[in-house]
Amino acid sequence: MIISVASGKGGTGKTTVAVNLALSLKNIQFIDCDVEEPNAHIFLKPRIAGEKKANIPVPEVDEAKCTYCGKCREVCAYHAIAVLPGSDGKKGSVLIFPHLCHGCGACSLLCPQGAIKEVNKEIGAIEIGEKGNMQFIHGRLNIGEAMSPPLIRQVKEYINSTRIVIIDAPPGTSCPVITAVKESDFCMLVTEPTPFGLNDLILAVEVLRKLQIPFGVVINRSDIGDGKVEDYCANEHIPVLMKIPFSREIAVSYSEGVPIVEKDASYQDKFINLYLNICGIKNEANSRH
Ligand code: SF4
Ligand code: SF4
Image 1 (cartoon, rainbow, N blue to C red):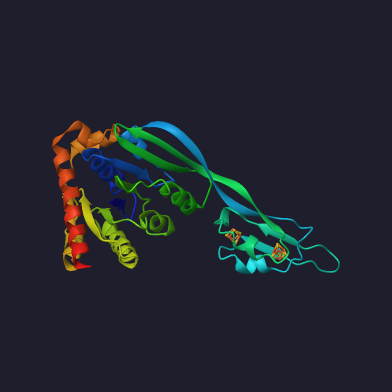
Image 2: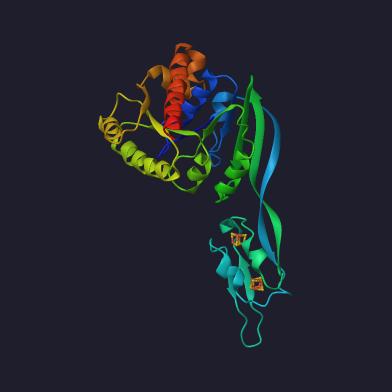
């Protein structure tokens, strides 16, 4: 079972929930896809055994062969190529913007002159390790690199679905989140009961409904703010999987980089119940199809 943990906005406690759930269960593979700011390792403290560089193929143009026809510019959906045709006997020019390139390969495939070859550009690294019997994998995007989805896709190639896979997704509702949660069996949306929390939850719900991924909500710091998140979930028939009241003990534990289940074992049962809750909803959804 692949469970992704997402949130419409940062700072809701998404990683805290993902990490504590992982530590409460057995046979876990933990995949941190929040590649711009991976921080699950701070709490899990895995022993990292290996690292693999992550590359994407970006185009390189042989201007001796190029006729400046502009086909590569036309085919690039990401505006990563500009072609300046020559005039008055002057040579033209092809400009590549590697930070916009998604490495899709369309330009090199469609260049009629065979003037484009692909060269590897390093965008980050994937680190693999373990914590007890938990397998841990995370991606780290290079600083200044804009394209996180290709790295997230490469991190997800390590998914071992014979285990319970927990994916810590990036916050938000844009491409990186969609790349991270796609193909999940279930997605947990972690939110907080505030107007901002509700606004971003609504956006995240729209995304998950489009992707047709079953989901439920975890309300963190559930006793601060107002009841509008719960009202929204009730009206939309969205299961509230767990409510975590604000606790000084959890906040202190977080600031020390220690998961609450390691400090207070009574929390383990709560996270096991969260998992059982997810299994129940998933089984119900399966039986309807
Ligand atoms: S498609 Fe090929 S020949 Fe045409 S402008 Fe691009 S690199 Fe040059
Ligand atoms: S590889 Fe794809 S994204 Fe990159 S420049 Fe070529 S067409 Fe654009």
